[in-house]
Image (cartoon, rainbow, N blue to C red; front, side, top):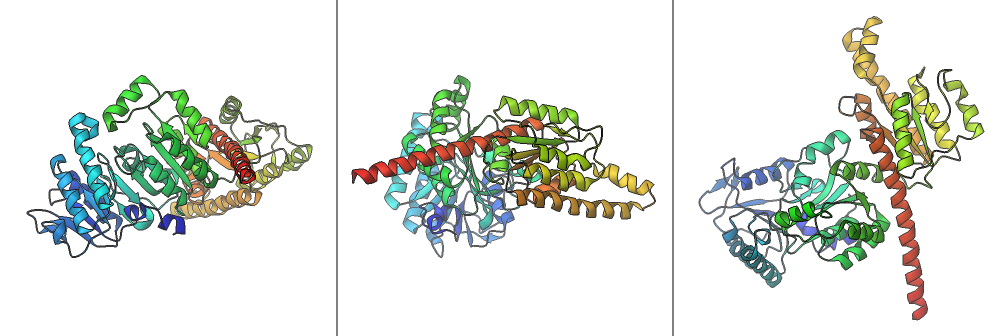
Length: 497
């Protein structure tokens, strides 16, 4: 844990040593019970204290009638109670010495003036006792590296590198199963709900210092502290990529945000300008948000926008090339020395233009090692986009038809996949250049999953892969521009003093 992250005001909110849980019972259909179950499924290693007025044991843990009866003051309270009980409960948490809370309960600002008054009461209580809380009207927090989750759905994936600050709990908890096949996982996530106390800016600041977070994702319906958001983003985006999906820019999106979290949105063009000013890459969909996170979190910064495409199928290569042109990526001609070096590996039916289309490769190692090495060494190439198609079932049936048993054929193919995946990963890493693969067979292609687990991003279509590569280029340009601006501002201040 870095010193900055440990000193964060909300460090114990996502790194608690103990948790008090309000609203869980032995009723398996209740929301609070499901959220406590998620914490147990994660294997949280600190003490857990269910608080319940009538049950003595909740999900196998001793329960207490009041937070004031607990043997110690835990770092975190999770509150999933009827609206009318929340303020009293938070007051008692303050009396006990609890200084962080997740308030999942709804019925506050998002429902109108009466709820807004109740929310103000929560804020006043938190200020009185020095409590930091997320919510109300949220699903809480996740820290996979601390085995912590208060979400409704259980997290069953691996600890990952995508940090998230979201004004929708669903776009955290319902993404768990979506990310796993992509080879991705969350590091630390915040569902901020109404942002009455802890908001997106606080979360962004924490994630910027979190050593387990390589890229920050944000789902935004509105920003309440615009100037502070820009200040924090300019600093964080110099250290790691920040990607945002904003949905309040239309009349219908703004109305939905107001009813969802009570947030007031702004014009689309305004948010575009804010994001550019502070180095945030804007995504246009949830799928694109995580495509961008996969690429920006795993690829080195590109030197420029010159991309080469490698494929053994003409159509996917052409679609990728067309999208590159639409999003501002250049497809340079290959250097004569590159064309000469490729000659032994390209069949007569192929071509060495850009895209490099083999039509058919005689050897998997040609396609996965020698050709990528040559292309990545080209002085005119800043990055590589590559099409994948390796059908495990077809390869096994070929081995069986050649005389192997089904078990022997499967072992043979899987062993070859290990060697081949290591080859492409090594070729890419030795080049130091960005690489993005694309394949239509994401879910059922074992080779693709193996490469992803080794840390190379593979996206589910040529269009999405090209757009993610363009996001990588765009982010680096913004980062350099902001770095120059910060340097000029520092120089001006130094001269003034």
